[in-house]
Image (cartoon, rainbow, N blue to C red; front, side):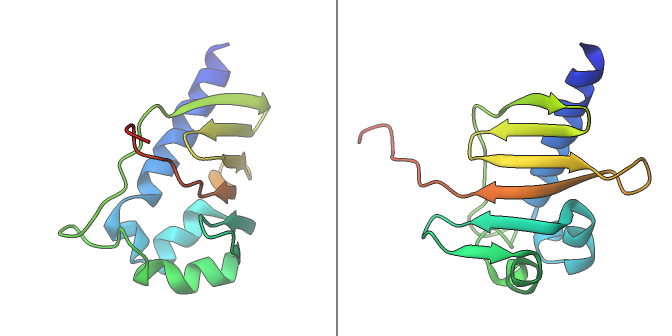
Length: 118
């Protein structure tokens, strides 16, 4: 069970790194965290490929220490299989590509979340 908990913790660390403005503005750093077959479905419903997200990420919200930042709450995860972790707060799937490559985000779905008053 501890191995599964470690995998979830590693995926959460990767998720949080992708929210860091210094990573968002560095294609090289973001590339280390995204699977080459990465897919995202944005809050607008737009489907983003690996190359599209790497090209646009530096210009997207959350790319500045002074500007709005993503702050997740209630993030949890479950190991679906060895080397595959599903994180929830917004749907995200992480896969391990081996020891040297480490964990990479494979799929992300940006889901609009209503405010608590809605």
